[in-house]
Image (cartoon, one colour):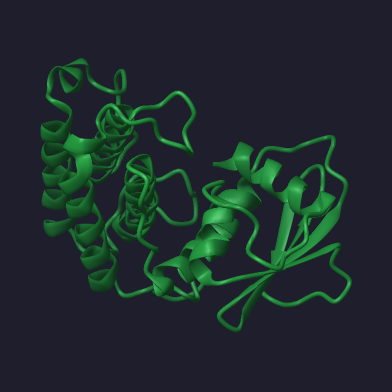
Length: 246
């Protein structure tokens, strides 16, 4: 992949990591069904598993039809399946679509300038890594996200999610620079739109640095500010805007 995804992995790597994280979800699913998911208040492991299965099925249909899936989601029959079976079956449906299409083939997405199967390969690699982490966290232990995937995930959550967030009349125009792995992103949080540049700003209201996984998890509301990053109003505002965008 190329711009606008400068830190993207190869599609083969996305799929390998997606397979690995999905397999881990299946592995721990039975033990996590009744556990509470820390990052998703009110959700049990079963709720998270069913949500992930529904996402897989929805995206499989988005690829199969190259259109927004019609009807009520999730389909009523999905609720009749045992949760781990639903996760496996919906993942198999998704893999059937990935196997029968090239990344450049058309697919419905909610990003107008990327209506491709490749968008979903990338997006679901990130979705699954976060939900694998969530499910393991429900059991009290969670392994880190692959560092290369985490770097691309930081770029994705900022460029695909944050800059498309809804307007916020209370936004202050604050600026935050994020740094990891020798890379940087500076976001300015305006009322109408969030702007982003892939550079350092010495005039930023907050400077946040950390390892790729810890920075990604903070951006997704799955962890604290990276160690050494002082709390600030600008950092808190960034998290609030991201919460509405994700």
